[in-house]
Image (cartoon, rainbow, N blue to C red):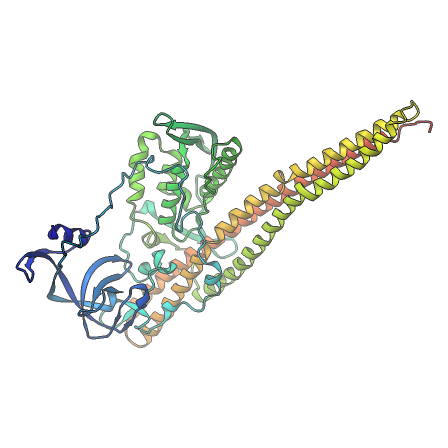
Amino acid sequence: RRILGVAKVISGRSCDLRLLPDSKGDCLPSTMALTARVLYDFDGDTENGELVIKEGVKITVHNQDVGDGWWEGQVGDGPVGLFPESYVELIQGEQHTQSSAVHEEDPAPEDHTHDADDDDWDNENEDEQRGGAGHGATRGYESALTAPDDPVSSLSPTQSSVTTFGRKGTVHKDINRFTSFVKTGSEPFILGRVTSKGTDADKITIMLSPEGTPMWEPFSSPYTVDVANPEKKKKYYGMKKFTAYEVTITSDKGPSPTVSRRYKHYDWFHERLMAKFTLNSIPPLPDKQYYGRYGETFVEKRRQKLQCWSNRIARHPVLSRSFVVNHFFEASDNDWKAGKRRAERDELCGGALMNTVQHPEVVIDLPKADVAVEHFGVFMKQLHLNLSKMRLKFIDHCNQMSGPFMGEWHKMAGVIKGLATCFALEETEYASQLNKAMALTAEVFMDIGSLHAEQPKYDMLPALDTLKEYIGMIQVYPDLLTVHRGAMGKVKESDKMKEEGRIDYQEASEIHSRCEVVSAVCQAEIYHFQHERVVDFRMMMKGMLDAQIAFYKEIVQKLETTAARFSDDTNL
């Protein structure tokens, strides 16, 4: 029983199990832990489970599979915690035997983990709450824009972990595994730790734009996406309900075969895009809804938003040509499962994807690029502020239109109708035409009030959809700014180490070259965003103004028609 308990505790770790006698002579399992020597002092955050270790001491390594460059271990009989793997070196041939005694009265916790079927779409509710960074979750925009110089440029080994580039010196690695610079895969790429290269078909080209800045090479076969005919469906004798949409792409070769997609498919699609294209702006999916999600109004609204979202993906020069995008928009039911697994096993994600980027015609001036990207950060901060203000004002205007504005017209209609009723008490042929005109005026004023209540759906609400979409997209760009700052920090660090003779010219040049790739990617994404923004807001403002023109024209027409009833030739 004790043996099984220990096996559960250490399940999931790579270790060598042995049976060692305890004080009572019973055999207990043990693990063979590795021993490492600390190369640099590390003042970890003990409150977050990190260790404080000093140069020269030996540390027992319990787990090398923590991820993101971190190991788990302990010094002597001290607490178990995390430390950067590149701060230590393993001592060859030295292992430490650990025995684990589990008392009968303290059984190990049960392991409830299991492997889910990677193609089981029915294990979760269609509208289960999403979490995490997907779907445009906020990523701390204010802090990213106002942050000081990126700490990864520091040369202090007590603040950064290290990655060896030869025997003479090291370029430091960010110990904060939660920063965008690390999570996007940019740091491993810059430090030369990414080996996946891809094939020629995977190559992504950055070219020079007419404005003289980096831009993505345009996609040679553009297409549009149509999401239509939402249909309510059931499974398991009505126990499982969902809405399916017909998705069709149309290119210069004509429409492709229509495929059926649920919101759950879109959810998966969004997650794969976020995992693969870490430096591209992936717009958030339309919000989920628990109640009323099968109502006609909600389903149609979601269809419109999914179509808008799909076309934004299709317009991106890099995303639109990727396998996962083509698979989602075109794969039939028979091909779906195989393509889904291929996308989930794609190795060209994050930093590995940057290995496929080439910019043969674009010379990157890193200091100039740094200024341009920082300027974009200031622009985005102001854009976020003003979009938020505009959104709040538009919402307030919608409330005014359906509240006070409508109410005022209805009140005016009420007093006019009251006067018309008074006039009707003296019904004569001489006054009949005036009485009818007064009653008509009251009706027209009521209609105009109702027009005010209905008008937001034609002008303000479509504009609010665009504002909300952009506010969600903006949350991605602090990651891009942080990554670019981190790359600039690595450039400065490698230059200093080259001057000190700690790394040679070739190593520094390779770091510079990879930082140029990161900078080119950031600038190309900025260029795409700015051009999309111009098109989108031009359409938004024109649509809003056209709707308001039509609105006021209808009011003028009603007023002119009513006024004509009072101008007939009548002998008063």
